[in-house]
Image 1 (spheres, helix red, strand yellow):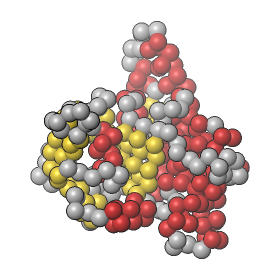
Image 2 (cartoon, one colour):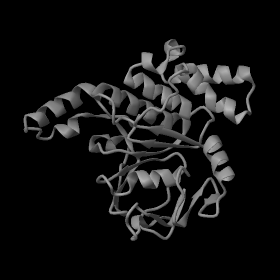
Image 3 (cartoon, helix red, strand yellow):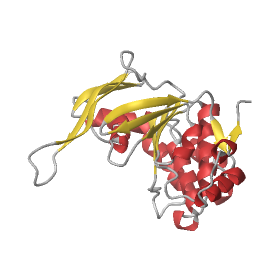
Image 4 (cartoon, helix red, strand yellow):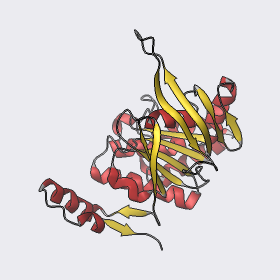
Length: 271
């Protein structure tokens, strides 16, 4: 995934001067921060208002750049890209997971997961049903398939959202604060699931988060501030949070005596 000189400006009501949210962002062979690779797990971090979600929306073609270009799967996206082309790209090759689950309230978990396949129309009804059930099994919800979103916990709703995002076998999964509304246990369970999908299915993940404790899951962290990339950090290997140790770490922070607990809250998963 290559980004070249990406600019995004907005015009706010009552103001003549445009607000520039992103300022010539680049992820290419000539920039210090290199392109996002296939199968990579990249996190986007930075202060509120710095441009993280705007950048994610541009990657997902939900919004269009003011200038500059994005190249995804060899396809160039810029101000000249048609709505039909972008809609087809989103449906076939990009999955989305947001902080608010955005499940259809009148449809069961199974129906929510099945819907993108029905819309795309390249599978028979039997194949759609089989894949929807398989995806719910992958995320640990095979016994909740017929439940409405209102009958699911927050963690279960987010698992359903992830299953739906995977329905059409996307090559890219974009996640905007996917654990923001979840408690600690569900946060770790969702992050473990995402790491498993990244490792086993080689899905490229780009995730926005405010939580620095989740950086251990990523291959690389990009820090965005005031519309520019400030720096990047690279993990030598991905690691998971250990729930019990992490809770002790949080408790120690609450008591203002964390010490070196941050190191102990991780699990080594290189094997």
